[in-house]
Image (tube, one colour):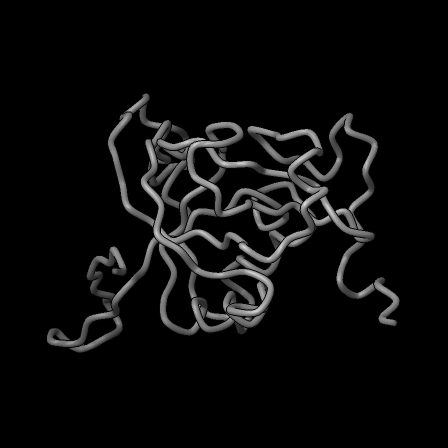
Length: 177
């Protein structure tokens, strides 16, 4: 079930509403990561509004896997770490784009997850304390993985430029077999 909210935009008629869905990103779509530009408002992908930082209430295995060193959240609740990431409200256009980008439903599946909000960002860009409220959101996780992935290190936070030594290969640079 989608957790959504309604927002009104001043340029729209009084009765027009846009339904937004919460998405939790933990990998290359986060701020400062290689694919974050896809979430920016000047893209034709749709609208994404940053809501704040969060972490999963349950533990999940977050691994860096495959020949392109892609971060993957394995859909195995209760194992791994409480994964940290960012929450965005996205419109239907962005949700459709993200489904295609994440190769949903073949590579990743959009599943519901319970989150604990850690910080919320104010209109001026600064954070407004530690709200620590619970939120249901969608996340792209996978049940399609190699058994060896469960033997890899589990991370609570992903950084493409981290000290793990695994260089992320962006989509545009991949050699397809």
